[in-house]
Amino acid sequence: MKTSDFVAAFPASIRLALLFAVASAGARAQSVGPAAGPATPASSLPASAAAAPGPANSAGEDYLARLGAACANDFNQPAYAPPAANAPAGSRRGQSTPFDSPPFPDGEWQLGGTPQPGDPNALAPDPLMEALYAGPDGKRWQESRVQIYGWVDVGGNASTSGQTNAPAAYAVRPNQLELDQAVVYVERLPDEFQTERVDWGFRVSTLYGLDYRYTTMEGVLSDQLLRKNAWYGIDFPMVYADLYVPGVAQGLNLRAGRYISLPDIEAQLAPDNLMYTHSLLYTVDPYTQIGVMASVKLDAQWTVQAGLSGGNDVALWVHGADGSHPTLTAMAQWISRANRDSFYFGINSLNNGHYGYNNLQMFVNTWTHKFNATVWTSTEMYYMFERDVPAGALPAGVTPGYAPEWAAVNYVMVRLTGDAFLSLRNEFLDDHKGQRTGYATTYSEHALGLTYWPNRLITIRPELRYEHAYSAPAYDGGTRCAQFMFGGDVVFHF
Image (cartoon, rainbow, N blue to C red; front, side, top):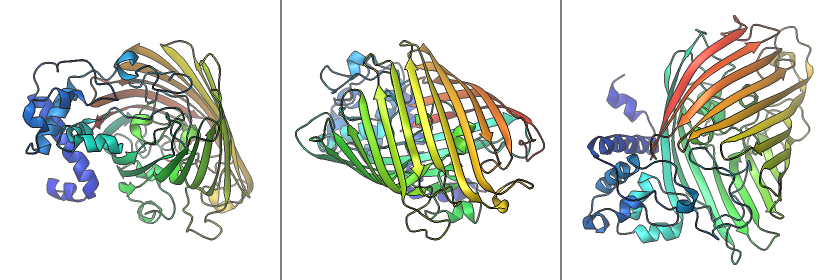
């Protein structure tokens, strides 16, 4: 395939994302020496805009030139800035953030389906927004709170398997270099620090790459995977609106649209994940839902959530036995007074439980403990099942009917420097009847990964992974009982 044909195959939004990545690389090649000044406070004008010469703020300045200057500046800035530089006193209600992000993907205790109540939810701008802020309409962009940003994630692996790495994910093709994700976000985060007025927000995400295979929802461009089995495709894993109402307890957030399934330590979107690959536990559980979610922060320790959706990974407009069903979600988060522990537990999805497209009934609990500023750990356990699973959806010889699975995964994170940390993952999965992986067996998986931010623009994540199936040869197309993989990715932020 010619390069021009390859580029033309991308959606327009993704071609724009790749343009930003190329512009970033060009700017880095031209940059000499470190940028002056400390890392940028999230609440002020970006350093690249503030430090730029006079023409950078003039109406005649070319946008791509400002983008190049922003990329050059961010390339010479460390990803991590001390908390004092990023979080002015009094900018948050409730307890402080437990983790530094970067280098960790998120500074908050695990909480899905809502922005963080009590926080202004402002983002430190990436180069695209820095360039907009530096332009003639920069003040208007900042006041609007609308952000446009994204990343390009390229990964690869070397595996002992030759046909497939499944059930490992998302690096499902062995010994390949892949475009895992090219992602663009357009979003507005509601200001949930203030308590005087109702505020609103939204997010529209566009994803192109190999990883669409794991976010696909039946009824949303799903023919790419379910009929054509295309290796690369496009998806919109998050399209939702938020409404913040401050007068209910310490804040109510209502979310409506397509959103990520609430629980799980891990995340579909690459920068939000602790490692390059995913646990087996995460690979086989629900991904997204379309519905309405209410989240209420009762006090500094408790947040409760309740929602109604059409079910897991199926659109509301898909009908029939494999279609949508009214599905309950009910979760709660408790944080210790010392801000060292979090329990996030409840029901991710509950309905009649009859066999259908990913109609999993899921009960889940995650405990996260922070030992100190350097070491923390997170453990998730769940039990899932479907009823009346037919023989055709199970491995040969397995009795149809009730099909359960349970799993547990533990992560231990050790911070090495301000910009790097190690992740150790150990897990166990019992796919009792093989309904999730295609093999009725138990699995263990162990992985060690490094996350390193050489600067604000780039994240590098090498990883070693070993896994074993105990009751059946479940790897390399059912020919091996074990698999070893070395993999990794590079994320370019824009």
